[in-house]
Amino acid sequence: MQAAYQFARRLALTGMAVSGLLAVLKIIVGTQAHSTSVLADGFESAADVVSSGLVWLGLTVASRPADENHPYGHGRFEILTGFAMGCILSATGVAICWRSWSKVGVAEQPPEAWALWAIVISIAAKAALSWTKLHFGKNLGSASLLADGQNDFVDILSGSVALAALGLTLYNPGRFVEADHLGGIAVGLIVSFLGTQVIRETAMQLMDTMPDDDKLRAVRDVALQVPGARAVEKCYARKTGLQYHVDLHLQVDSHLSVRDSHLISGKVKTAIKHKLPWVQNVLVHVEPWEDD
Image (cartoon, rainbow, N blue to C red; front, side):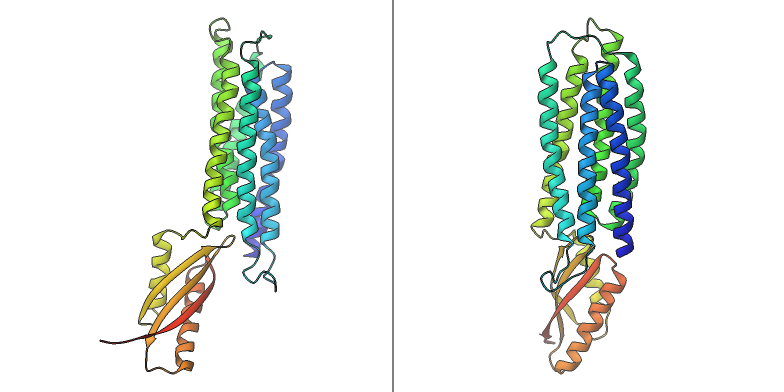
């Protein structure tokens, strides 16, 4: 698991570097080429640097082993940084909307055509980042890395909107004079929408929302494959970083001794952790099973 945290941290650092270069590129190009939509997309990329930094911080703290004060480990910090990232994205989207709206109706120099290249480069780079983060975020079960990958995916959408808006303005400046500014507003709305989605998903995990039914069914199936396990009365799971902690109420024959029941519960715990790598630990509560 430490290797997974290390890989995810390297991926977050890569995202910071790429987003930083894109932010500098688009802000300079947007300013020099007088394009509101390109400038708005540049500010959004600048926010990505902060969000990827939060992901790196969350993964770094989450990788620390359990201690006396944190017996379940530090994994929740990774989810918490995902929640903070959602808040930052929402605030950034509102700021972009406000700045772009203030440009509507203001007479300015029309944008330059060469500004299109900055958006094209950004879309290509973000497509590669988004696929990589979403792919490995799903495999690792990282809430913050998935949120960062979704953020990069929305960058593709916002970049496409900026590209279309700038293209309309360049195609017919007289008719679509405000398209570039309205494109900036659209970028801000997309970013805010993503932020609220990230806030909702990470908040559900912080509230110990149960995993999907397939995961719980897998835990039950593995437990019942152990000789001596007769039934699973209750099965709960909560996410604490990249993995889950499982609470299991296992039923065994009522005539068994405490020692034998304990041995069965230990085998169940070992089997679940071995066959389900997304489970970090299992707490097994043994109950009597009566054969009616």
